[in-house]
Image 1: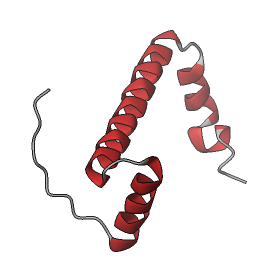
Image 2: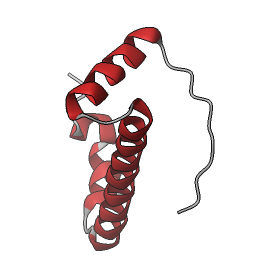
Image 3: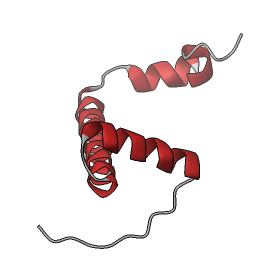
Image 4: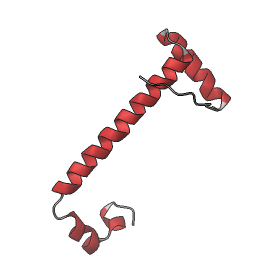
Length: 78
């Protein structure tokens, strides 16, 4: 696996929390952050795929949003 270097600037409280969690997990801060980023990428890509598939199967929603209006449909208007 190819690796690259990336300077990451974190707010101090986040860095300290990440250091603490990495220590609890028994891994380096670098490994902990790399794993956290990989998990986030996986979640976002999985969600994007899910919603792309759902969008292709949607029926009736477009006319409902046009007729009712998105805000009313979502309960955002009282």
